[in-house]
Length: 318
Image 1 (spheres, rainbow, N blue to C red):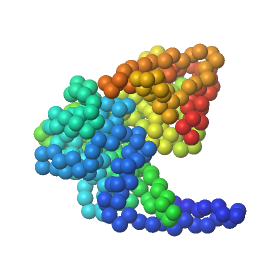
Image 2 (cartoon, helix red, strand yellow):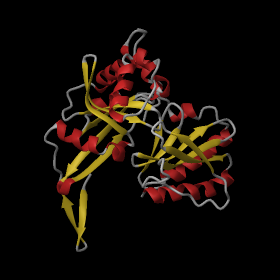
Image 3 (cartoon, rainbow, N blue to C red):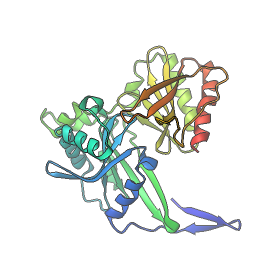
Image 4 (cartoon, rainbow, N blue to C red):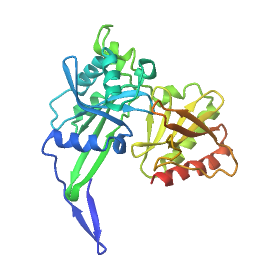
């Protein structure tokens, strides 16, 4: 990737800089966890069992813990380390919940957490071909993010996405007690193909058309979880889509309302003259009220108006 800056109608190259230490990467990411990954930062250097995790974060959208690890070199196995971290999490759930509650002042319960959506994010200036191929599966619960530093304190991040329809279970061996097998029993990353497998052919075509139009918007990408597909603008969800036999159930985040009635800075209000959206709200344990706009989609004729609604959110985010 080459970056340029326009000065007096002339392009001037922005030269690549470098992170001197892993700690430098960690400090940048932890200070901007929500901006980069849409996650709530919990704590740095969390020790549990015989491991020390670089960063612990929480994904409110999926009600799941996320471990973030930082690397500068390439002499390590993403698969071995990732599954070891997920295994220690699943075997020490109470410690993760206790740490979250003590750090945030909230009262999270074990039943509040969707452990099937647990994942590990690796952040590095670069990953080698072996590391990228080792996680090139449709259901591996890891994310690889490359972070680049340039002159003038410019930072660029890019996720290395999987292109395979192969399952990690196919290479994990026959031993039912292997770390991969034991983790996969509880952490169940799903592919888009699996999530949409119950749709009729017509409804699947509706989804593919909607997805195609959404991905035409700059800087959007597809992200799958155990329960839904989200289209993200950079690293923040633009829309969540859940699949039923008769329709696509879509959600657009409005934002939070505080106990005093004041709204978050990013609170979003939609213009919906046809009144197809409904508002769903819930109360966080902190007393804050969260809300989303919901609507359904089942035919090609509905796509244009739904895109009109979604683009309002996109323009609000950008």
